[in-house]
Length: 306
Image: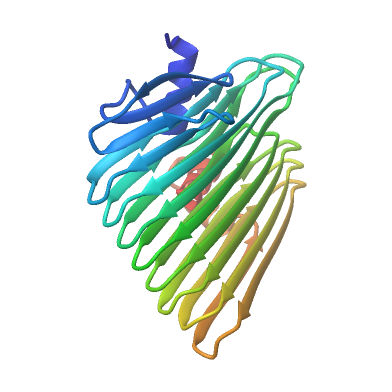
């Protein structure tokens, strides 16, 4: 059964206010605790290693799958391998995410390896939120790896979000796009204190008329460190755009390396990167309508990361 803390964590990482209707798999402290399937979506527990196979039938429309993970005990190192088979012309939303509550002195860690096989004409929206809390000195560590094979004329939307409270994270994303495949990535990260975040995104545009848009927005506060590496590789007639914007505060450090490589004369690739501090004009404007400096600052940051 889920307790009050479990429900709070599920709300933070998956917007779950109750057990969802439809397909879901809830993992807690290294164990699958609740699961449901539907006529069009099957969830099968792996037998050879921890994780699940999510199988979505062709032509499945407007259905959702929830696969959140919560860790509420200290000293846990959880590794999970999830595989997704998306049938032709399906249109689904997949809500993942991991929340760690650690009030102890020992590290709690979750590593999730997700591999997607997206078949012709399918459309998926994949949302992954990470969140940490707890007053203990034990580290909260999350290391997600996402691998995507997007076949002909597919559309892939990724929302990769780190809300707060994660001490260390290495986020690896590897994507292959075939003929006519379209990719949109929106990444949003917040770090504070002495937290460290590293994000590596590699996209291969293999197919004719494939396209990719990567938008990364981050805020680094305190003495935190953020490192970004984006690699966009055009191997056919294709279009790609990387946009990295970051706000740096206090004594934080941000390093952003956007890279584009064209291996075809009709590959059109663009990258942009900007790191800066909060605009004083915006702060003054909000403070002039009655907000304190802290309230004005929080308003700007929330808008930036939205």
